[in-house]
Amino acid sequence: MDVREHVMAGLIRTRLAEDRRTGGQPIDVLVANGDIYLLGQVDFDNQRQAAETIIKGLVGVRHIIDRIIVRTHKDHVQLSSV
Image (cartoon, rainbow, N blue to C red; front, side, top):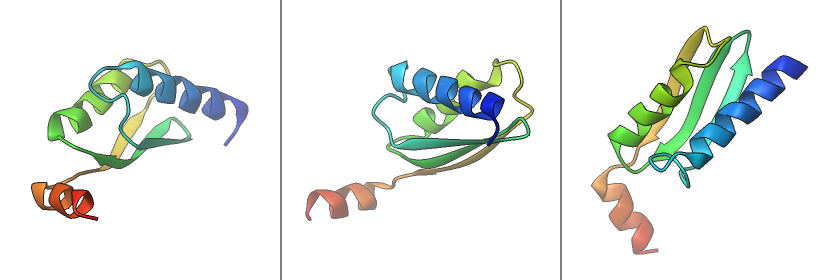
């Protein structure tokens, strides 16, 4: 990752962390040649959609590759019973 990509990834992480819809969710960001890879898990689909919306308007973003997994209710039950 070059300096511009590192700066862009940091900006995206900050925006995701500061947004009430995505803050606190374990979303990782990788940047390669203007392509933004979103990785991680969220509780609800609207959080996944919000992550893309937050990024779409940034200068230098070519494509968003969304690899975010929305946890199912079954996942929540299993995690809370551990």
